[in-house]
Amino acid sequence: MPPRKIIIDTDPGQDDAVAILLALASPDEIEVLAITAVAGNVPLALTQRNARVICELAGRSDVPVHAGCDRPLIRQLVTAENVHGKSGLDGVDLPAPTMALAAMDGVEAILHHIRREPPGTVTLCALGPLTNVATALRRDPEIASRLAGIVLMGGAYFEVGNVTPAAEFNIYVDPEAAEIVFKSGIDITVLPLDATHKALITAPRLERIVALGTPVSRTVASWLNFYERFDVEKYGGEGGPLHDPCVIAWLLDPTLFSGRKINVEIETGSDLTRGMTVADWWHVTTREANALFIGDVDAERLFALITERLGRL
Ligand code: BDR
Ligand code: CA
Image (cartoon, rainbow, N blue to C red; front, side, top):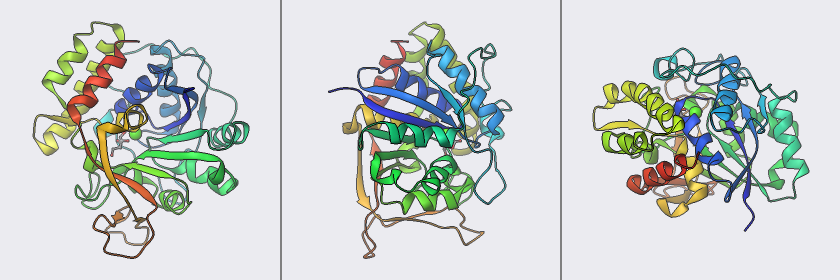
């Protein structure tokens, strides 16, 4: 089988960084056509810069990095420096990127690749707020029928919320964009907190990454050490969750995960529950299923996969 063609839409973020590295370390299975940055964990000027830092760390300055939307569709941007640090990639000092930002705007780049490749061959992997993806769909609704699917990290049902009691960060930041995506009719796979809160960066798992003894593994370990401190303080337990790599791991080995085809609606009206993913896990409505909602992950095997792939870089 030829590698699956993907576009990574992202707001790096240390966990986004590990997801991008995982994809770049897997050329037999995945071809990264482009990386499109969006405002989220930190403002766009930093997310596009961080995406280039990550490509250079992987020795892949040939992957085009584009800057997309600098704010949600209608709301003010909410960022997460409290989790990711001021730069979005705090934890280790890396050289400023030398590769240039691609000239094409991120939304145009999404449209360009989906239109250029044969129908049904491009998968959009969304690791941040869905602003770029929704803007692309608004600009050209035809792309919905050309995409192979969207795999996204966002939302929660049993775990409810991480940024408010009701909402997960990526959906909370731009709920109107999420609503457009979930109503698009595209084949959607959702990696919500229900799965990612089981993908914990425990000490033994981190040690196995450190033991690779490479510049990439040392950098990843420093990032994860910094990034998990916030969630360990918040949730307690044996480690912080590693969210975004689950999206790429799903493409590499779906047997790591299990979930249900269900209906998911996005709350956009209420201030109290803004960005809630109302997931019909128990099939108690007649609303049509619009997403595969992942509920569980084999965390041990997930980290084994991530560690083995990081060792290739
Ligand atoms: C999501 O929010 C961001 O902070 C992470 O990068 C991840 O995409 C988790 O809620
Ligand atoms: Ca992210």
